[in-house]
Length: 211
Ligand code: GRF
Image 1 (cartoon, rainbow, N blue to C red):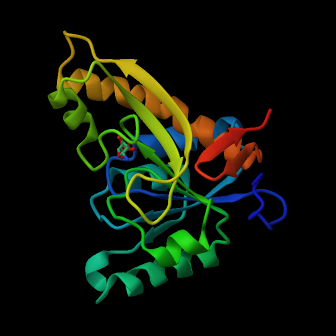
Image 2: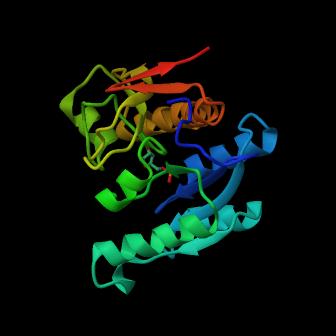
Image 3: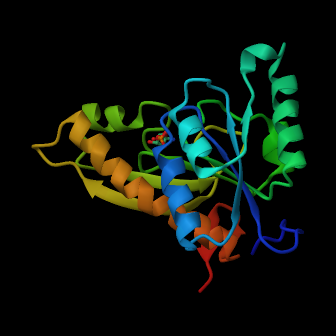
């Protein structure tokens, strides 16, 4: 792929989609500010007026688009509005960071191999919204973090990076969550950097990292 879909010139425009706290969004803001991701963080899309990500965007001067599902009669209209914002900000790459909605085919097809997601488990294990708790409750000895491309199925697209951690006997759901977030905040900026630098090649389900 090497960003074969990237037809833009100059710096790439990134939109982050977040519904919650936004700690991953914050890690991405830092990486862009530091220059380790050489791209423009152009837009935050959120569906939640209470999202912590909102304050982070304001402080960092990132443009915000509030698109609430309940303002639209169906999912198609909701996503059309999102696509309108993406077009207006000339977005090249979408980064899902705790966006609590499954994207429809309109979006996933239009932005094929241009949407990333982070999941707090080693996919394909523990898909869904409770992955940290599910891995803990299951008694897993190992879990981790996955960054992957997004397709129309939940937590499914080709895997870009994964990192494991050991669940120790002394861990609690909350200590495990802290460990997972620490990993996320390194792994996501790294995956985004690889994408922006054109170092990811999608070969079917496999993503090859070009050196
Ligand atoms: C993260 O654990 C991420 O893996 C999952 O949603 C959570 C978002 O956390 N997709 P935050 O809002 O970035 O703090």
